[in-house]
Amino acid sequence: SQTIHQWPATLVQPVGSPLSLECTVEGTSNPNLYWYRQAAGRGLQLLFYSVGIGQISSEVPQNLSASRPQDRQFILSSKKLLLSDSGFYLCAWSFKGLADNEQFFGPGTRLTVL
Amino acid sequence: DAKTTQPTSMDCAEGRAANLPCNHSTISGNEYVYWYRQIHSQGPQYIIHGLKNNETNEMASLIITEDRKSSTLILPHATLRDTAVYYCIVRVGTGGFKTIFGAGTRLFVKA
Image 1: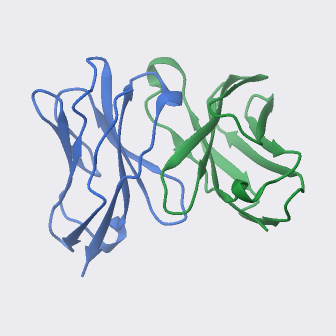
Image 2 (image 1 turned 45 degrees about the vertical axis):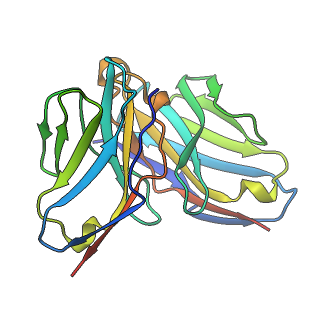
Image 3 (image 1 turned 180 degrees about the vertical axis):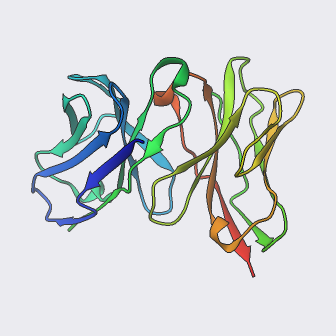
């Protein structure tokens, strides 16, 4: 069976510090990968998605970047965090093609920028 | 992708059916209706999806109107653990990157 891992679970960072959140998927190969952010009490905003190694699409301009160095690894980064980067970050994966019906979400990382 | 409209919140008594409505009047012919839910501080969980026929699985039933402009998610016997935010989404079948989560409906199941 497939599993998705995210870490850390919670993170408190000062403004201006760098960020690296990691997401890995086990039990499948060549998945589509996604990064979402959820502000308090709001819906999810798609930040990035990837259909393969080194292939990243950005949905909104922002202070963040994403990378996919390996097939089942997706990393969300920032060089300098802003207060507005606070939120609940969720990684998700899905199968490709006709099987791309359901997205499977990780447990999330709650980021607080002070 | 079409947008959806859902009530902000709903209450339901434990053991009763919870009927969550969703309006998607601008849905296109190739767009599916998906439902996810998010329990507090967890990632969303897929529930069900459909194109035009009603669908049922172990979690819920999805009723789509004949004109496809609205749908209803039914939890047949709601439990306290069903308290969550429920998202109604419309998107093409093979387009995970087009999954747009709105504010959803906050369902409170009360004992």
